[in-house]
Structures are given as C-alpha cells and as structure tokens.
Length: 574
Image (cartoon, rainbow, N blue to C red; front, side, top):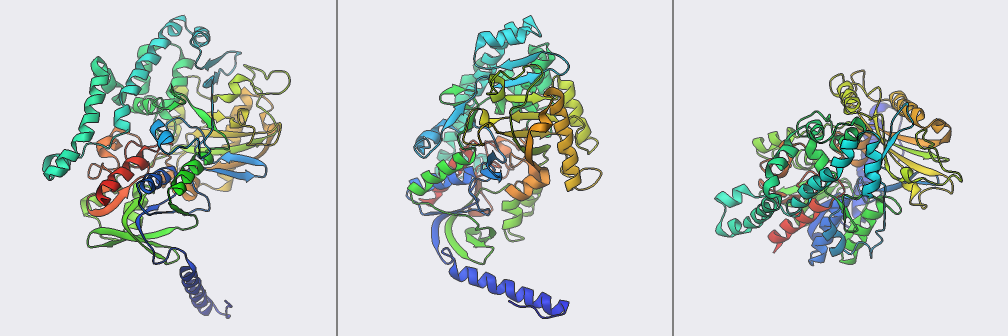
C-alpha cells in the first residue's frame, strides 16, 4: 500500500491497508470456516493439557496461541544469544503425577534434574548459612548452628506438613463441589455432583485428628505457625519464603500459610516436596504436553490471537481471531485469565451484572519482578566460597534466598511496596541457577540465573515503570547480591528485567499475577474464580469453560485445572 500526503488521507489509507491485510490473512488462514469439537484459547501448559485430554478422548481440537511460542509462562526463550532462559516460571514440582503418566510426558521429552539440597540461605555479615535438603542428619546439623531445639523439632514439622499436603491430594485431583447442582439440579446432575463430595470426605478422613491444625494452617499467618514450631530466624524466614512467593503477602498476613502449603504439595519421581530443573528449561514441559496433544490429533496454532468468543442463544459457538478468521466449536475452553476470558473476549452485555461484578472483584495484585541474567561464572558466596576448579557446589543448585534472614526483613520489604507503593529498598530474592545441573542452557563455563524478586508494585507511587526505573530496581537487586557474593556484578553478561506490567503484556497474566489471581482463601476452591462458577463451566454461557490457573486448584505449573476442565467439557460433549 502507498500513502498520499496529508494526515486525513494517510490515516484513511492506513485503515484501508489494515483491512486489506486482514482480509488477505483471513482468506489464507487454514482455520477460517473450520469446525471443531473444542477450541482452546491460549497455549499455556494448562491449555495444552486440556487439548491433550480432549484429543485423547477422540475429540477434534484446535489450540490458538497468541504468541509465537507455545507454553504461556512455561517457556524457554533465548533472549540473550547462547543463553536459554525459563523466562517466567522456572521450577517444576506441582505438575500432577497422573498427568505425567497418562500423557506419557517422559516419552515426549520431559526430563527433570532433581535438586538436593533444596534451599540455601546465607546470613549476611557472617560466615554462617543454612542449607536444607533430603538428608535428615545434615538438616539437623545445619539447623543446630542456630538452634539445637529447632534441629530436634524440624523432622516433626516436616512430617506434620507433609501429612497435611498428602491429605489434600484428593481435592487437587477433583473438581470443587457444585453446590447448585447438588441442591437444585436434576437427578442426573445431583448424582454427578457426588464425586467431588467423595474427594472432600477422603481428605477429611486422611486429616483425621489433624483437621483443626489444617484449618489453622490455611487461615493463619505463616509467622504464627512457624513461631509455634521454631525459634531461629534464618530457619523461619527460609520456610516463610514459600508463604509469600508470587503473592502480595507478608509472613504476618492471615492466610499466608496456605501459600506455604501450596508450595510443599508437589512431587517429582515419587519424592514428595521435591523441586527440580527441567532439561532445556520450562518450555520443555510445555513442548512435551504439546507433543502428547499432537500425537492424539490436536492442532496447535501459534500467532493466532483470539479477538472474541462467539455467543449465540446463550451458548459459546466458537471464536473469531484478530485476522477475522471465524472458527466454530461445540466447546470453548479458555486458558486466559478470568479477566481476559469474561470481560475482554465475551461480547459486552453477555454476562449477568452480578457475575460480571464478581469477575471484576478478583484480586490480581502481584509483587513480582523477574530478572533473567546471563553470567560468565558462578556467584562466589562469602559464607560458602566456590570450590577449586570452578564447578558448581551443592548450594548453587538450590533456591538461594537473599535479603531474608528474618521474617521481619520480609515484612519490611512488603510494607514498603504494599503500604508505600514503592519497590522494596532491599528486595527479597530467590536466586536459581538451573545451568548448575543442566548444561544445555548456557555456553561452557557460563550460566543462566533466574532472579524472582519481591516486592515491586504494578504502578509505583512515583509513576509508571520506565527503562530508568527498571534499571534502578535491577541495580538495587544486584547491589544486594554483591553483598553476599562479592564480584557478582563483574560476571554479568546481559539481563532482562520484567516488572509486573511486562509480565502482563508478554504472557497475558492480568496484573502480572503468576497465579491468574491471588491464592487467598476468598479466591480458592468454591470461590475460584468466583463463587458463581467454581466448576470450570460458566453457567450464564453454555459450552464455555475456564481451564487455566484462574480455576481450581490454582496456580503453578500443575496441569490440574487443564485436566479437570477437559473432563467437565467431555461430560457435556457426549
């Protein structure tokens, strides 16, 4: 297209050009006018899981991903030449074992490096550090540096929280109780609603006498729970990081203990509460699921952004892509956040006002700035100097906790962000070095670092995020690391700084929230995403299902929302 002089004519020509290009793309689209049993909006790991289970059941399925790469937040990208980063999510633990087995993900390329030890907390200004792993005797020796009493108690704490985590397994693998179907539905729907009740009863039976302590655990501040068990701050703070990670919470916030529980309910290779690095980065998880889906006939399309969901007579009837391509489907599953699914993609006025009000009230507050760093060598921590030869030491494979030797330090960082609206002056940092175990991610001798930092607001009080404010925050983080590992700055080859608005823009995560909505008690189980639609289906719109982390059981690379949504859709596709 060519443009004539003059702004009005240029604008008009630009619109004609865009319309012509849109028509050209639609005519040449392989999807325009096609019909499927199901379309999945978004190729994140949960959307791919849904597609795999639907295709495995013999349904025709198309996955429509906005970006050029599948995986959503579970992606591997070479953002610095020669360095492959798990650009958003960076560790694996929560992926349900049944999904790994049923979709044969190992056959499709999934390989995980188990970490042991698990966590490393150096204490600033001393030569002490706390390293925790699977070796019970070594854990006791490590903890005894700070408290002999805590060293004795710690195995009992692990057994207690491990029992609670195992007890709620049935809830993770079952849809929430459909109260409406159970109380007002047909005989058939009431019978179907009994299955989640069985899971609830099984969890209650497994908890047994621990039911009261379970209730306290999911409602109390993490600091209250940890204070009951331990006295040493480095141990309490190390455990408390799991209670706040990814959440705009302090260890003193009621309900933060549930987030702690959420992060210890995983399993790898049959070992409970294990975390690992995926060979090739987190994108390998998504690609293994994608291969499983394709092996059963699912069609996977990247660079296919959906502009709206088609609704006819109160039923989701398909989607329209941004290029104008129209695709029909008997079921539409959305891996997008509830905000995008219900408020952005549905035609205005489709939802009842009360339902829309509930969706608008979902909390997406995020405290996370993710920094991906390429380095020429391993950080050399003063508390545990690097061994001769330059290879990784055991603590390099851990989650390395910095600026959080005490719960007070975490709380102070939270207050600066949540109450004052500014990034923390001493950000809490979880530093991971996946290349310490996986040599495929970086050139020889070099490494990739994942810095998961808190707390930073979506909209700072001093103004929107800018390149200057991103640089300033990264400098603050690097200065902190330098205090623990002198010489760190000299190792930096390149970096990427993703503030909450960047995480939202790139990965489609509303508010930059990695969980598709806060993991608070008012947004879990019967209230996830809202109390009006806790069972994946969308009562006002038949044939529309939420299959992402905004649905039960919530966030993390778990796959459960995707599987459970697919099973609900299959029931209604019969």
